[in-house]
Length: 241
Image 1 (tube, rainbow, N blue to C red):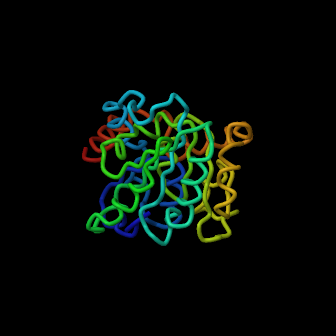
Image 2: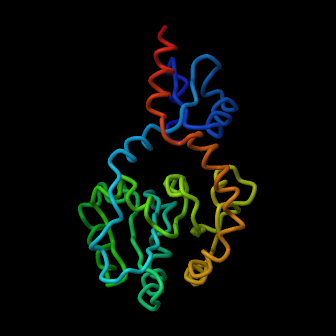
Image 3: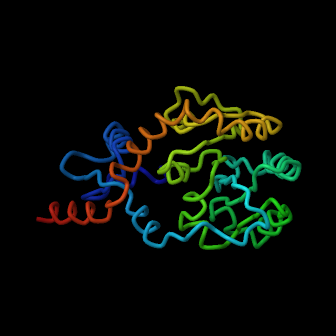
């Protein structure tokens, strides 16, 4: 978590799920009696403003794959994997592709990254650099397959378990690394030429990953996922009393 050490300065902290609770206690970021595990209020907001399946993106009715890259350049899979995805989706007739990087990807770039990304638009590829759909869970709610690197948005996608493919941009040894726990939720590929075959078999192999997907979503976002806003408000009131 970014700036996680600042958590120690707060009198009371709301945590999303058991996974973050355990981590925060181990790191002495919170102390008993001064935190509550309530879920992620953002899920309530996005559910309330949820749009229907995005229409008008493509001229065909194919299911779509969501490619969600991290915003930090040293972690993002965009430079290395986007050309392979672009070529691969132009050469197949099974899926469409929505490219929806973290919205911070385009901050402070003076429009250069936006222009670079939009050149990938094609009949089967939709690149989104600025719409509300980047932040309101429209894509994560309706995509059929998720492709990403280290973005935490995968947990939003997995509220409804579906196939995932993860891109190991830097060749990191991710197994048994708690920071890459979500990479156990789908196939991990190391080279650009491996990504399209992994996407094409993702539906077929999904059954082996689904049980762990269901468990980690509960550990990360709480159970039930919705209702965090009310639980958080109640926890604050109890603490103030």
